Length: 147
Image 1: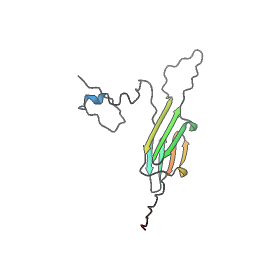
Image 2: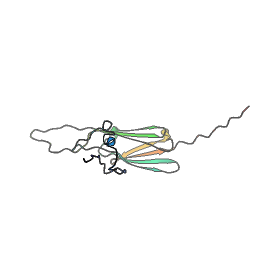
Image 3: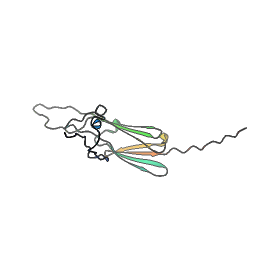
Image 4: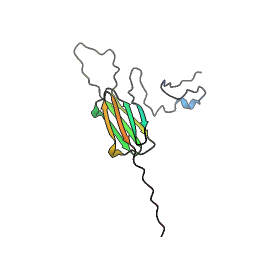
C-alpha cells in the first residue's frame, strides 16, 4: 500500500517516506483544506537586522493600504492583510477562470529583541510593506544596597 504525503515545494523540510502512519493525519483538522483551483495568498518577507533596528520587507500585492494591519507586542510582530472580491457580472458575460485571492492572511514572527513600538514606522508602496522596527533600549539592572 502506498503512503500519501502532503508536499509543499517551498518547504525547507524533507519528506521522510518511513514516517509513522499517524503523521499522515497530523494537522489534518488544524489546517484548512486547500481546494484545487483556489489560490492561497501568502506574505513573503525579508527581515534584516543591524545594531539599532530591524527592517522588514513584506510582499503583499493587490491589497489596499487601509486593509493592512501591523501589531507589535514586545518582540512579537504580526502582519495581517485582507482582500475582498468585488462581484460585478454583466449581462451575457460569464467567468471562465478566476485565480484572484479573496480573504484574510496573517503572518506572525518573533524577533530576538523587544521592539520600541513608539518609534516603529511602516510604509506601503507598490505592493511592498516596509517596517522599520527600532530595538528597545536595554534596561540597566538596578543594584540594591542591603542595609
